[in-house]
Image (tube, rainbow, N blue to C red):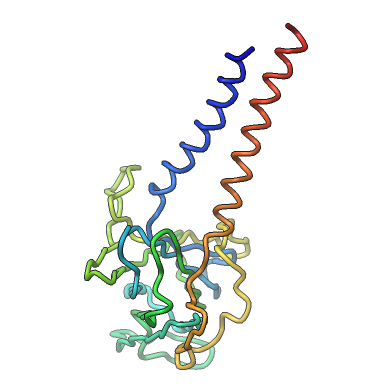
Length: 242
């Protein structure tokens, strides 16, 4: 019987360890949306985790596509972060219902106030309303993440043609649903109020502004408890049949 208890306990520890070890594998700047449909407008969410152990993240630069530029791009203010949009004159104007668009936002830079910088083990979400989305299956963004120690991580790499291997620093890629269908990509947070313009994106934070890791911790705890229940179930069944 002690051996069964040991096996059950080892199961719990194994699940916990695998969760902790698996986390860094996906700890890169990513993009998601729940309503990204070809030809439509969508709120896209950039998720930026801090991978450094002794430095905070102070800046995020996201480069929007230039081959298929967005006629419109506006950001949702993030407390403690200032957003600046960089516009570029288009070689070919975009035709919209409101007339031709001759310049488009090609980069958005978020810079944190000292208190709002993303600490080790935390992450921050940034919402942008963009459109119309191109008539293609994916949109690739490029992101540069700056740390307080001066390090800059360039999330700009794309997978080689025909390869399923993820690059070391993959560029965020958004999948677009065909027109008339809903996007199946999960969003990172509620996106109400995301139509605020870039001009109003600057905001000051009194409480630090960084997102906490509560939901992640709760998810890990729930999985660990579930694994523990399975282990105890094994022990109880062994007792009944012993």
